[in-house]
Image (cartoon, rainbow, N blue to C red):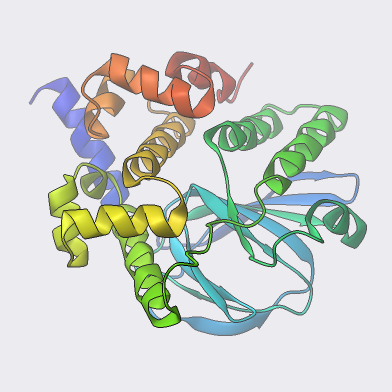
Length: 293
C-alpha cells in the first residue's frame, strides 16, 4: 500500500476509534487561574445531567464535538468555539457524535470574568477565530515545554482577551418567525454535528452533506449563512484547518498526508487555507506546536 494512503487510513481510523476513558490534566496554574486539558469519555447521545457549575469558566474545544445545555440554552460545540459558565449554572451534555472530544477548561476568578465577559451578550456560546485557536494551542505547547509561569500568565491573559472579543456566537436571524427560526437552528446544529464526526464528513460534497441532513443544497447553504452569518464553505474550512492543527499537535508530521486526508487539492492549497485562517503556514504551525523548543 502507498505510504501516503496508509497515513490517510490511519488518520481516518483515529477519528473513528474514539478514546473510551476520560482524562483531566492540570496544565497551568498561575495568578489564580487554573487550566485543565480535558479528554471526555462520555458516550451517551441523550443529555446527561443536571450538573451545577461552581466556578467561572471559559471552555474552548480543540477536537470532536458535543451538545451543551446551559441555563436552558442549547447549542453544539466544536473546535470553532466554546462556551462560558457562571457559578450556579445548571448544565447538561450529550454526545451525538460519540466520545473523545478534547477541550481546555480555564477556571478564573469572579473579577477577571466580569472584566472580560460581563455586560456582553448573554449568549453562552463563543466563536473562536483561527488566530485565537492557534494562540490557544501554542499556549498549551508552551506549558508542555515547561515555560516559566510569567510567560504562561501573559499568554493566558492574551488568550482571554482574544476570546472575550467574540463572546456571543452566532447572530440571530430576526427575519424568520420563531417557529421557523427554531427549525433553522436545528438544521444548523445537525449540520455542525454531521461535520464534527471527522475526516470522512469533511470530505463530503455539498450535495452529499445536504442529503445527510435531509434538505436541498440550496436550502442548506442559505439557512446556514442566515443563522450563522458565515458561509458553509468558510465554516467547513475552519473545521478542516482545526483538524490539521490538532493532528500536528498529536505528532502527524506529513503535511502531504494531511492535505490529502482533509480533502485539500494539494499541499499548496492547505498552505493557503491555513495561512488565511490562522495567519501562519503549516510548517510554521508545526514549529509553534512542538513539545520542544
